[in-house]
Length: 55
Image 1 (cartoon, rainbow, N blue to C red):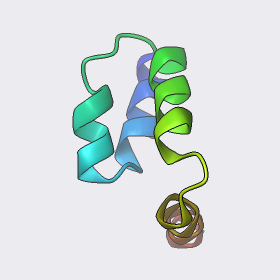
Image 2 (image 1 turned 180 degrees about the vertical axis):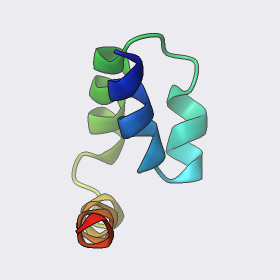
Image 3 (image 1 turned 45 degrees about the vertical axis):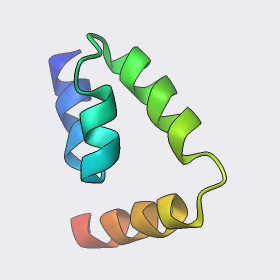
Image 4 (image 1 turned 135 degrees about the horizontal axis):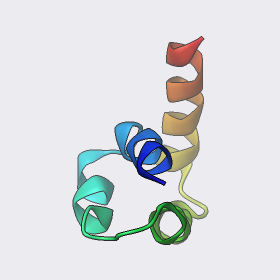
């Protein structure tokens, strides 16, 4: 779970990171991130940019 948490947190914008940093499991973090970024054009653009950077 620690690796999952680190993987999720590394790709987040600072404001979302700050909001989910206190959660204890990867699942909790992932669900909250999904809620916060749902329908966000910025979230979609950042996800694409992070995917491209990691290739």
